[in-house]
Image (cartoon, rainbow, N blue to C red; front, top):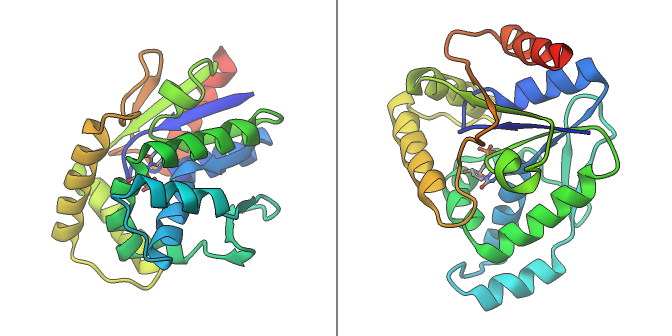
Length: 219
Ligand code: DC
């Protein structure tokens, strides 16, 4: 079974998905990490992303693996090298929206996501999971939060990978990225009609997880 959690950056999707997965005995899949990994791969190889031909060629040789063996984190491996921390940098964060808007990239990632989750119990988090990847999922959630709260949370994320950024700059980046992710032609960030919306602005992570958990228990 698949449970989908969508929403913009900084609303607590990943932490919620991880906690919920451990509470339910499911695995969790962070699809944003996959788009970040492709972005890292294309940049590392100096690929001009405006050339669909070049991007497609690179996608054919992409050797991306997700390692679910650790309890806490999914490890993202590129050519058997763990890039889980590298994909959280400012550089990748500012480049990922553009890469994730490329058709060939989305097709490849969506296929991997479907193949990965089809044989198990997964919490899958992203932007288009309830609308495009698993439109038939029984439980769909869409998380939101105020910009100030989201910017503060992202600041903490950057500190964790030793990058310092000004909170106002983060807020501006979040606004730009939301605008880009929501207005792109392919699979934009959008709430599924049948998704339950949870505003996490004033919630602790425990509150968010419990709200989702209660909903699943009731239905
Ligand atoms: O959740 P995140 O910040 O790690 O996601 C990184 C980027 O990937 C985000 O700007 C939008 C894109 N993304 C996407 O287009 N579709 C998904 N299912 C997940 C992420």
